[in-house]
Length: 295
Image (spheres, rainbow, N blue to C red):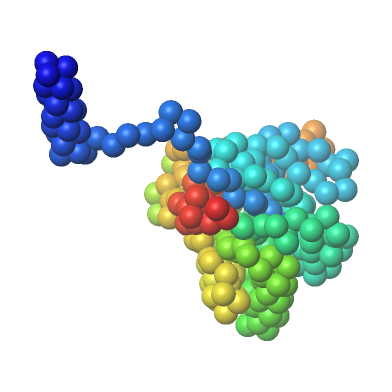
């Protein structure tokens, strides 16, 4: 009889304790609770996705990549399983052995895309010849800068770019039917409102380059929307961290050599380590990988 009474008291105490725990919001957590499943991830595109600016630049590679770029930062979170990063510095959408079209025709890439739940891409700047635009705007007159920006961002060129981008995104979606396709824009390179660092590049030329970048981003966003991909803008993330800001997230290194020739590091005008971390944060915030993973 005493044993039964003790057991009843113990059961009543346990029930009361459980009620209090529930009221306080405590829930039991299995000791061996499984982590959220990883998302199968594939990256494509140009130098921004290839990681340029995050570390040393090896020009001997056919497809130039740098470790530590935003793709690697995302992979190190453990929230994704990086199947493949095919991005190459200098890649255009359609032309050349490192182009996005070439990346998409590779059997290994196609096999990875069939498994992918997340794909990210940066592309478009090389198709408008932005490297040449920056070279002219950084070394020549404002008039020369204005002319090259106007020519490269003409309505005709932007229409061609829109068509090529839309086609590319649609090819990716067909190859990766289960994936969320994230399309990144590019940051504005110059702080023209409150620069903390004086550059030899005229302010007017800086404004022209920024205006050209805005046009480029507008076309990228329109093409992504038309193709049903997800556009992610990074201009807000980089605001206050332009190349001439106190805390730049964009790599910049240029000097005049002994012969009087301006030498520009190929990583210049690409995200540095902090910039690539900003891209990674923008990606993870936009897509929430745990919600994409197959259970």
